[in-house]
Image 1: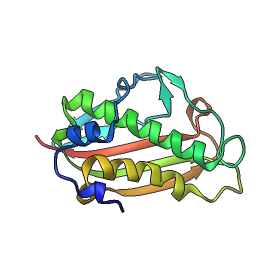
Image 2: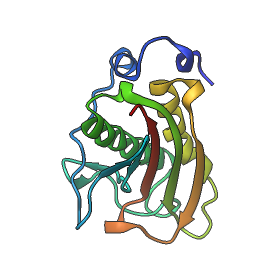
Image 3: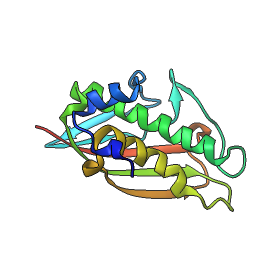
Length: 161
């Protein structure tokens, strides 16, 4: 783990220090909302690796895409998740912790490097929120995902009420 995860300041300052500009918040591809809050938990709909509502990547890991493309797809989905949370909360400084994320990875039958793909998300969340707020995670390889994209990310945040 890098020392970056323990630097002072809130998530908004860390984004700035890391030179990360969040994309526009994602918009639904169907009949659902991107975020819903109950009590101090914020649940996000599955986020995909999209830029301007268009897929950045299509295909499966181990077939059409390699590990580096998968890591970038996962990071792209994670940035969209952060943008959705920020739009809902007004500021990522209201995030007390990332409780859990689940990542679904479309793979060919003989791809077994799913943890490296998931680490791209873990690393981003560690760098933005700090090592003390990194989540538990669930990593699942699947045959296909919506619209042919390689990853889908589900995130649950604990937020200030």
